Amino acid sequence: METQLLTQDEKAKLDAELKRLINYRPTIAKAIAEAREKGDLKENADYHAARDEYAMNESRIKNLEQRLRHVTVVDTSSVPDDMVFLGSTVKVKDLNTGDFETFRIVGEAGKIDVDSDIMEVSAKSPLGEALMRARVGATVNVSAPRGSIKYEILELL
Image (cartoon, rainbow, N blue to C red; front, side):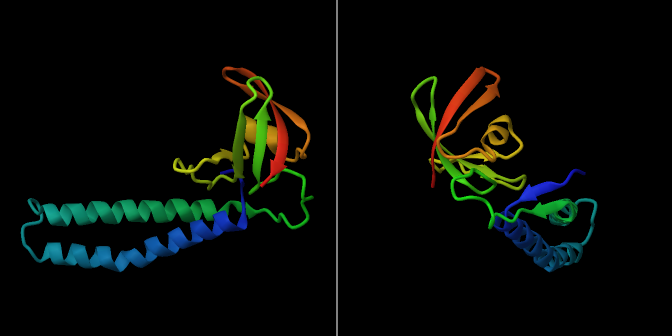
């Protein structure tokens, strides 16, 4: 598994999720025990549902533990104030259409927030790679499936 770059906040969210899943284990174990007491396990829907929930929870725990072993938390303290970097929120102008857009550069654990006016973009996506380390005032080219897009970086928010 390749190293994933994360902000400190993204790593903290993964750590919190792992802790929540681990703390949920006793609840699932209790549900399995209670369902087992109901008798015949072959036709016991509660038992099978609890076992399935246990398996899914353990799978998520294993996945998170593996991901956390391969993360690098990026230190953004020495990044210049006008440079786009992991965790930055950047306002850009699409030079092809004149539209203004706002992006947040996220690491691999980034979560797409569809309710926000800010589009979260992976640092490893074509857009993220074009924006990373660019400075306010610069123009970047992004190779997209619909063609090349030019953005002017207006400001960091």
